[in-house]
Image (cartoon, rainbow, N blue to C red; front, side, top):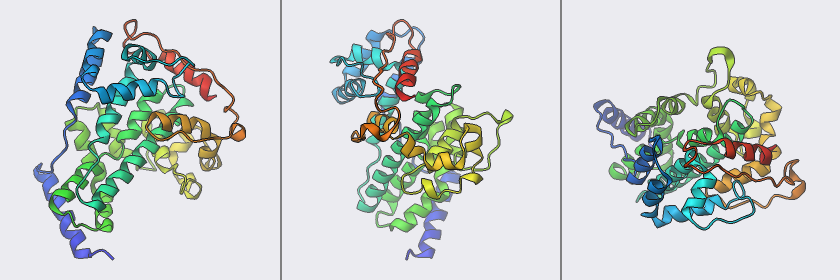
Length: 321
């Protein structure tokens, strides 16, 4: 049983650090900042991006590996960055760099805190995979944007764990989890703002746990996607009171469909999880109605359309329907 006084004391300490602006926020790695700024340049050339990525062999290798994964491969392997970037498109390229660089931040000296960070990173990637597949079935939403939203939705836990590791390395698991529950949305919003993420992503971090949230016109958005994806975990999806979650109606789902979502879309989720660094699941061919579909996307060259996702989406819709 955690010490209640300790919980209250550490919570007060964190709150004071937040109020004074002294809570240490991790910085986004330079490569992630540089890639984002480069991709946002409407006049960017593929050569500039290739030169930037070539300076980091680990990231380059992961980009090529992902381009050859089930979600993007068209049966012909790519072996160089130019071909991999052409196949992935710039939005997915940005997401991959974020994924790779952020993973290195989720580490601590304390075994308890380090395990908490590992679990949080695994959960974030699971939610990102769920968000990706959910958005595939919303014609007005972009799966790549949903993936990034899922990846960062609980990022506020990271500064809290870093703070605990530096100042309270012997903190017990229950107290640590209590801190995260209490502060992670506020800290997450501040962290993404400090990283100069767009307001819509900051809002997702702040609002994804509001199950009664209303939207203008009743149209689904990325907050709805992350809200639902966050509760679609294998151990809990069948036990959630889905009728109390307003987002499912806007997404066009019933409680029963939410309970069965993971099983119904097992193959799609396996492919999305592979993109995010999980090992590919061995799903029997009869497990889903789409498992026999083998259509693969070919993405237009980034030089022709730096922000293009049409090739990705058309191919993925073939694959995932």
